[in-house]
Length: 86
Image 1: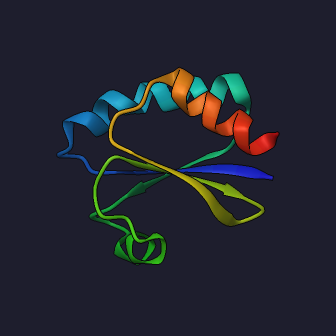
Image 2: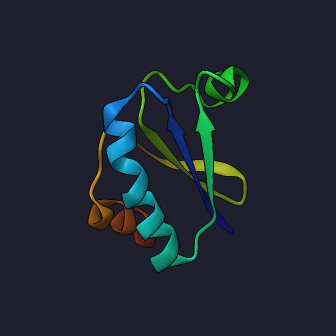
Image 3: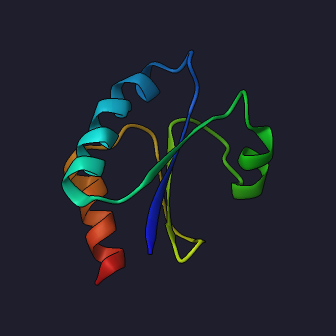
């Protein structure tokens, strides 16, 4: 099973720009998305070694398999998901 983790912060402009893109990806792919505010969940930041926001981590069966940092287009995120499904 695939799941997307979206690490973000309220003060991060690229995070705000990425939020609606991730929602579109969620709608189009049906993949569950977990939003993680880095200021409120530092344990998750440490667990996944996140060094900057926004960061997307794709989990497959609970294990991280792909990672993207910075703003991404819907097409790039969906391509990452399809590559992992393959």
